Length: 166
Image (cartoon, rainbow, N blue to C red):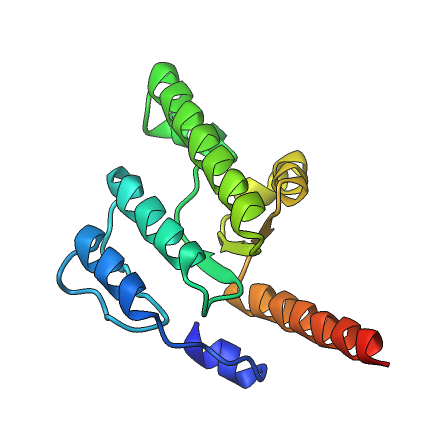
């Protein structure tokens, strides 16, 4: 993520000391202790850790947007090959709750979340990405596309700032 951001001219800010403390409390000891936050190795069952870390990052005054590469179980028809119907319903219910929480935080902290989920199943149902976008969560099939969108958003913010100064 860092390389993709730097290639697009985006600056990755350092984490505030308070954010590092919050992340130390919820992430495994192996985490990078820097931005970008690498939470690699977490399983699907550890969503609470991902969302605790996400909230800590959204609270950080130094951070203006989040690129989140996380497993999201949208488009769950493919899960029926592995799980029974009740399990898939439970996964859907949990994911809807988690995404509603992220949408609430996006609104509260007024920071965009760019979610990267390279899964064709998610994009097969076009309603899911549109529904998320309406809640302030942009869903992208690749990190490259998410970073490009973020770069355009930063450019537009800078453009608006220069227009206000004139």
